[in-house]
Image 1: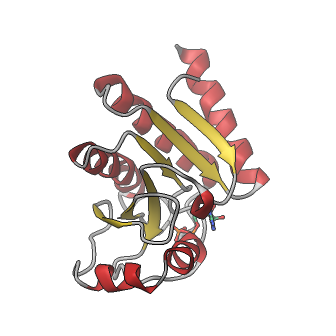
Image 2: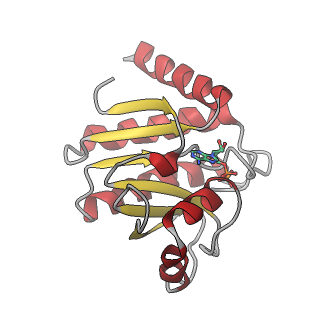
Amino acid sequence: MGRMHIILDDITKIKADAIVNAANNTLLGGGGVDGAIHRAAGSELLEECRKLNGCETGRAKITKGYNLPAKYVIHTVGPVWHGGNDNEDQLLAACYRNSLELAIENGIKTIAFPSISTGVYRFPVRRAAKIALGEIFRFLNGNSSIDKVVMVCFDEKTMEAYVEALDEIEEKR
Ligand code: ADP
């Protein structure tokens, strides 16, 4: 597996240099993983987020982690699934790529991702898993400064999708 790991866990419990938040365009909190991260980090996270003036879909912004075990939170905004013809695949890939680029700029060596867009935003999870892992591997191949990337799955179905996507990628190598 090398630098890529897939685990079943709650991302708010992960001790990494950074965890990634599947945020919305306002960056002012919401449901799902976003709500969980804000609850665990405390109100200072929202205060810092208010100063960021939101975030475009596919882009990423960084804050401190406050009460989280992680030092930083990288907030990225996944695409809402509209059937697949609205640039969803490219935007999802951009979330992973831009989050990893921001991590490198900030000296981050260990980073944990949730399954971006596959909750409330309804992106099909198998398709999302292939895109996510493809993009992460492409990035790791070109960058040696990241030591560890963890995909944190919150339920069994999501975990299965990512493990299968990883198997497919490894078979092709
Ligand atoms: P989106 O709006 O991008 O779809 P969601 O938060 O609705 O974001 O869902 C994204 C994924 O995050 C889903 O698989 C959901 O089950 C998962 N998730 C929710 N809470 C947590 C958590 N505490 N840790 C990790 N993943 C979580």
